[in-house]
Image (cartoon, rainbow, N blue to C red; front, side):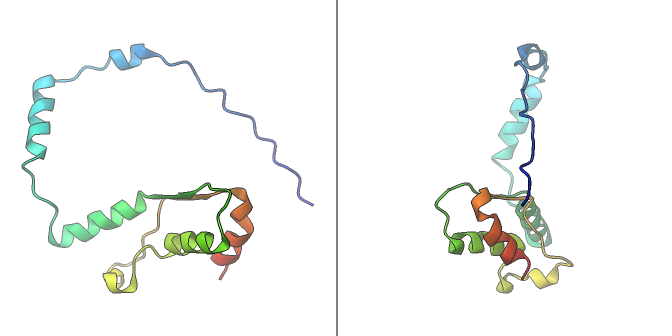
Length: 118
């Protein structure tokens, strides 16, 4: 029988608005930069695939529902292990990207463990 883990709750800290209010921003430069973003074109060609891979690597796949079925958990695990479809050209990359975090409620752990060991 496994023993329960004894974690201490993070007590947090008080909000210090002095840190926020102390930040200085060059308003003219920020306005120019914001205006230029609307005129920019999208990322094209070989760079587009790199940006899409980076987006996958920044994703957080999460399900915290207590009513998740084994089928839902399996789909989430499979998406985490293989986020790109076979037809997407993933074979052109040296490795398959994976999301940064996959989170699910603890009652799904046995199902997810079984799926990831396949």
